[in-house]
Length: 136
Image (cartoon, rainbow, N blue to C red):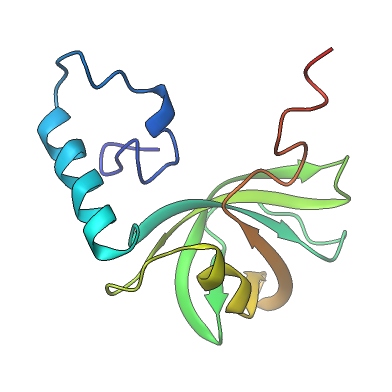
């Protein structure tokens, strides 16, 4: 997340107390309303998992959807529990809402050292998305 992203785009709207005043509140509320009326967000932070255990992601790798460049990896590491490199990328479309169907219908690849590798993309974390392992 950087200064060009909002809480909603990063999936962090649940952390915000909209009953309090804060810088950018009007923009975030307008974005929330626009998202509802437009069918969803057109810019979203998503998780990425490379299917091949060999390539390592660092940041800046190009993300492809259906053969078209759509984004780049913002942050990455190796997910030992997942058996492959994981990363975060900010997807942005030309008006098409980024929802579960948009993710599932796409053919996703990430380019590492001039070679494309198939990858999975998700709006939720790949490891323990429901926080079941953290709760005792």
